[in-house]
Amino acid sequence: MATNPDHVPSTSPRGKGAFPSVSDFVVIDRVNQCPKLASLRSINQTLSSLLNSDDSFMAQIAEVIRLDPSLTARVLDLVNSIFFGSKGSQRVTNVEEASLFLGLSRISELIIATPIIEEIQAFGKQSEVVDWTEFWRHSIGTAIMTRELLAAANIQWEDEGDYISGLVHNLGKIITAVTFPEQFGKICKTRGSQTQDICDQEKSLLGWDHAKMGAFYLWNHHIAPEIVQATQYHNTPNEAPDHAQLASAVQLADHLVRSAGIQGIELVEQPRPSDWPKLTGWAILFGEDELISDEDRLKELKETLERVTSTLKGIV
Image 1 (cartoon, one colour):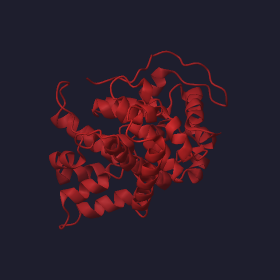
Image 2: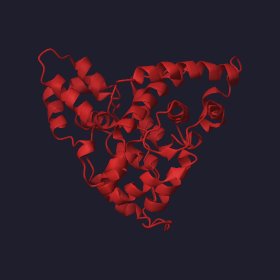
Image 3: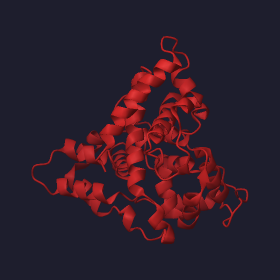
C-alpha cells in the first residue's frame, strides 16, 4: 500500500536565520513543478555515448542509469506511469526491466531533456562550494552498502529496491537545490556534529527536511512505497511504519560510507565505526542476532566497507 509522506498543509513555524520557513503549500507546489531532476555531467555524457553506439546493450545502459539517482527516479517514474499506472498494480523497481519497457528512443529523449547539475546557475555564489561529484559518489556508495547490509542481516530483497533506496536517499537535496536555491545556499554553509543538525536547519528554513522532500517527490512520481518509506525515514528508521529494515539499512549505509570519507555535501563530522552500533538502524537489523557479537559484526562491516570504497574509485 502506497504511503503518502506525512505532510499537513499548514503554515510551518518560523525558523531562525535569514529566511522564514515557508508553508507546506509552497513546498508542495515547488516540488510538483520540478519534474526534471538534474544529472551529473559525466554520467549524462557516458549514457549519451552508449545510446549513440551500435554496439551497446540494454544491460550496459541500465548500469549507467543505476549510477544516477535523478535518472533512476525518472526512468522508474516513466515506466510505472505509462505501463503500471493503476493503484493496484505492482511497481517496477528494476532499472534494466524499466529500460527495456521504455526502449532506446524514449531513454534518448529523457537524456536530451535532462538538465546538467553543474550547469544550473540558480545557486549563484553557492555553486562553487557544492561538490556534486562527491554527492553522486556518496549516493552510489550508499546504494551498494545498503544491499551489503541487508545481505549481512540475511534479509532478501526482490529486484533492486534495496539498491535504489540507497541511491535516492538524498534526492531531496537535489530537489531543494533546484526549487529553493537561496535556502539551499544557506543549508550548504551549515556545519554540524551530525546529520540531524543539517535536517534541523532544513526544517527551520523550509518546514521539511531533505528526507521528506525526496520522499514526497518519489511518492508523487509512481515510485514503489518501500523506496518512498526508506527515503523518508532513512535518518529515523524506527519511525518507519512498514519497511523499517530497509530504512535501517539505508541509515547504516549512509553512516558507513561517510565513515570512509565519502561525505557527500553535508558539512558534518565524519562518523567513527564505534558510532555505528549506536544508530537505531543497527538494533533493527542486528539487535536480535545472538550468533554474531557487535565486535565481530563491526569487523565484518569494516572489511565490506573497504571493498565497497575500492569499488567506488573512478566510478564518477
